Amino acid sequence: MQQHQSIFKQTANWRNLHLYQKSDALYQLTVFFCKKFLSQYGDRTVDQMVQAARSGKQNIVEGSEDGKTSTEMELKLLNVARASIGELREDYEDYLKGHGLTQWDKRHPRFDAMLTFCREHNDYADYEPLVEKMSDEEFCNMSITVCRFTDKMMVSYLEFLEKRFVTEGGIKERMHSVRTGFRKEQDAKMAALEQENQRLKELLRQHGIDF
Image (cartoon, rainbow, N blue to C red; front, top):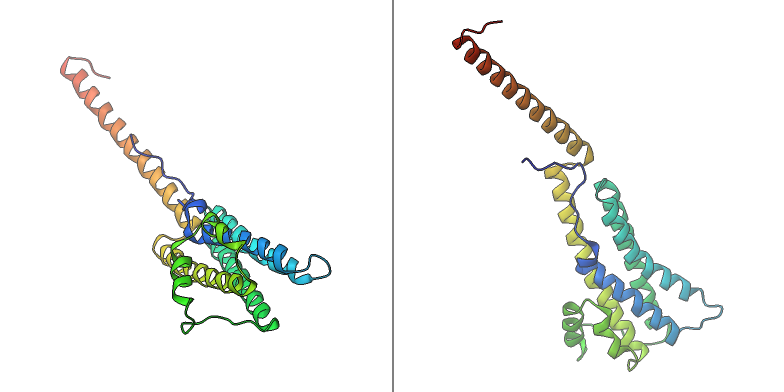
């Protein structure tokens, strides 16, 4: 039996995307950071950071769901997610500057270990045991690093989606393919029925029955 061809694009389960997992960890890290280090009253930065972190992960979810019908919308929402993560990273960097703290680079003795840890761990559960013990400088540098890895993953995923769109097209192309495939299937069935009809007529004639 021929498998039914769907007009809906097969998309990855967003829960399994490492870029989503990292963005979710980043959201939870940001909520914790704001509660621990920023005032809860009269500080707009709290709302801005939490909303940017939430926008990052939520737009990945919405983009993946919308991608079933619209690659254009998926790309648009993932770019919104990327912009939100970029905004969040800048907020962490501004915090370091505003509080006279150091933004780590490769010359810092703990930079490589932090880089390796953030590269290899996607789930918030991996970060949770550390956050209570961290200073604000440590917390910011870790979050900035998670932002950077999430951004790199988004860039790679966007490139993959763009290449797939070029080779496979969007929903219009899939609809055309489904319609064309259905017509071909119906034509093949009609041809087979006509052939069988002719065979039966010939068989009846051989037995002296004509019409």
